[in-house]
Length: 410
Image 1 (cartoon, rainbow, N blue to C red):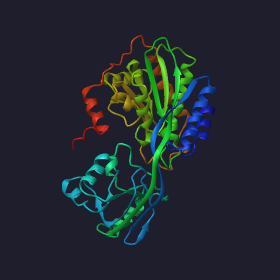
Image 2 (spheres, rainbow, N blue to C red; image 1 turned 90 degrees about the vertical axis):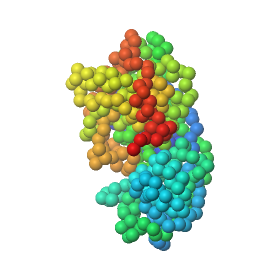
Image 3 (spheres, one colour; image 1 turned 30 degrees about the vertical axis):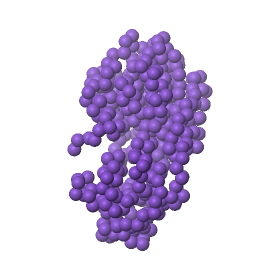
Image 4 (cartoon, rainbow, N blue to C red; image 1 turned 135 degrees about the vertical axis):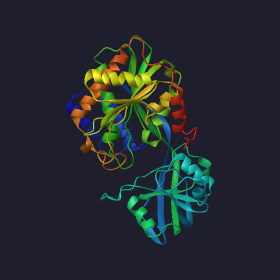
């Protein structure tokens, strides 16, 4: 793909477009129309998502109001109770959640939320941001759809600076009041799908998500990956491919892989013909190491490592579950590999207002895309796909943990 088009797509989509929003639909239609302009067969596939509109979200600690944003889809409540700072997940620490508003140290995961509920917490507070950054941004988070509906407790998110101030002022054990009022309803999100028939009904699917979090323009995470698979669709429209190809731009990935899950559910019978999924999530940034995570047999990682040496391209390939749209496919038994250029949060942060075009480098985008295309071309023209269509037991175990069917051992 030409440099000018890459930069145009980045510029045209440089705004927040969260899953299920009107802005997300605008980007979906833009990607579809751009694909059509390139001569590709593209369409939208709609799926249902949980949505919410917050009318009021407040938090006070000993009468001092703390700026906050209410958790979407976390129900409603008006709670006054002692504040408890939870730092550990042991039984004793969790037992102190009873009848408290709980300030959580770290990210609110499924098991931590369930543990709080089981131990009688009344409401929760999380935080994000960096105490050393000038901004006071607050992410608009949500209780994802896999949280238990019948046991919701209200929650808010605050900036890390205020969390530090609360605890620094002997905040543990102080009185707090948390109010959350919202309407919850069903909305729509969309996948953008490009169909490209080949010589066989056997398929390779390319995936990348295009939605953002509530603060982010999402250039790095993940318009870069969307541009990557659009570039490969353009390439394969002009070059041979024995396999039939599909390119799926997934909506609502940031909300729990909802687009790829919806695609797998809607196309479950078709997945029997899919031999491989190639996922792109965050490529082309200024700095960072290029990785390939094979949610498949180890031999795939070895193949990609050898190929990196063959083509003179630095890549670290390994076997694991990657937190992106490749995962629902692997859970259905389809081998997958995710490509990314990983940079630490101090270089190219994601899920915040610093994820903009400023962290991207077009020349790196093109080099990353060229390597992935070289790999994809080998697969797409294979007489027989060399990747075993079987998910190894150790990866099945990791999928059970990632998809919350099994608690990870400490």
